[in-house]
Length: 270
Image 1 (cartoon, rainbow, N blue to C red):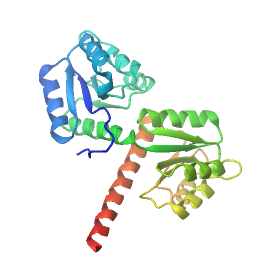
Image 2 (image 1 turned 90 degrees about the vertical axis):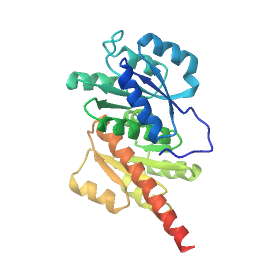
Image 3 (image 1 turned 120 degrees about the vertical axis):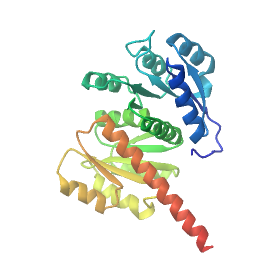
C-alpha cells in the first residue's frame, strides 16, 4: 500500500474506460489496495470535462487506448497534453502500437489480458506516486545523452538534476542531501563513472543512494566493474525506454525494501 506522506499532493486517479463494468473493476481494485481515490470517464468528452475541472487533484491517468469516440488514442493525447502521467491499457499489441505509445511518452502500457493486469497497473501508479518525491541526477558529458536520460526519468515522475562529469556530480550530490538516484555514464572528462561510483560509495550506502551505470562500451567486464565499485545496476547502450524504466524503478523498489529491512533490524536491536 502507498504510504502516507507529509506532503499533500494530488491523490486521484483518472480512469478513462468506456466499459462501465471494466471501469468499476479497475477503480475498485485501485481503491482497495492503495490510498488513491478514482474518478471515471467513459468518453473522451467526459475526460476533457473532468480534467479541466479537477486537474490539480489528479496525479495519474489509466487510459484505455481505444474508445468509441477516440479510436486512435486521442484520450492518451488528451492526458499527455495536460502533463498527466498516463498508464495505457491496450487490448491489441504490435510494434506499431508500441512505437506510438513510446512516441507519446506514456509512463507505462499494460496489455488487457487478465486480472494480473490490475496488479501491474497498481504497481505502476504506486511507483509514479513515490517517484515524484525523489531527486535523480543524470551524469554524462554529452548534452544529447543527458537530455535522453532526463526525459526518460521525467516520464517516470522523478525530479531531475544534471552534471557534465563526475567531478561536477560530486558537487551536486554534496549540495543535494536528499538525492536518491544517480544515473552515470562511464567515459567522461575530469572524472569517469567508475571513479564517481567509488567516491559516492565512500559516503553513501546502497540503501540511501542508488547508482545505475550506463555505457555503450565494453561488455560483461564493464558491468562487473560498475557493480564491484558499488553500483546497484548497469544498463548497456542502446537500451529501450521500457528496459530503462523497468530497471530504474526496480532499483528504487529494492533500495526502499533494503532500507525498510535495515530499519526493522535496528528497531529490534533497541
